[in-house]
Length: 199
Image (cartoon, rainbow, N blue to C red; front, side, top):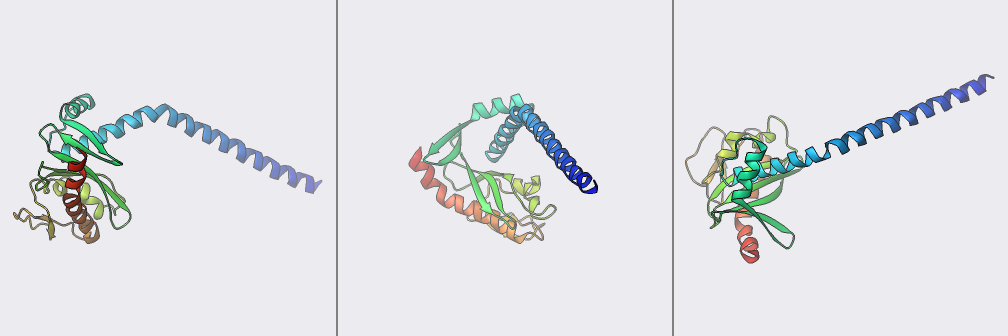
């Protein structure tokens, strides 16, 4: 009798676990399906805002106003598996991926039509340490790239160099800062061949 009661206990525990797991999975699946459209819209808005910022085009206002500004100023071009953005003034915004301390860093980097001057940079994803490398998304860090010229080098944070090929590093995040420098310099060197051959 004791043995049968133990077996029943195991069966009850297993059945309870299966039922609760199924309910949780169905609940999460339902919530995802209900929010999928909103997630997609937010993702598209985030990308549009990043591209506009990298192109040094003000991206303020409601989601509708940002979408309108984007539609009026940006066109998407492709050549093979490569994609980039072009502004109505002829400047470029190039999506790039680099390797930071803990993983990949995704960004969009804006250049003038000659690829000599940077119009801006926006970081769209990173796995860097909060408070250190993840500070690459802070406004002060991104804004300092405007009107700089590649190849870039970096100086200590707080230097505020007025040289057009230098930017301030992030203290304690040398690997991340180096990754950003390398992403910009590599893109400035390689992107012209990609976009000019595909326009």
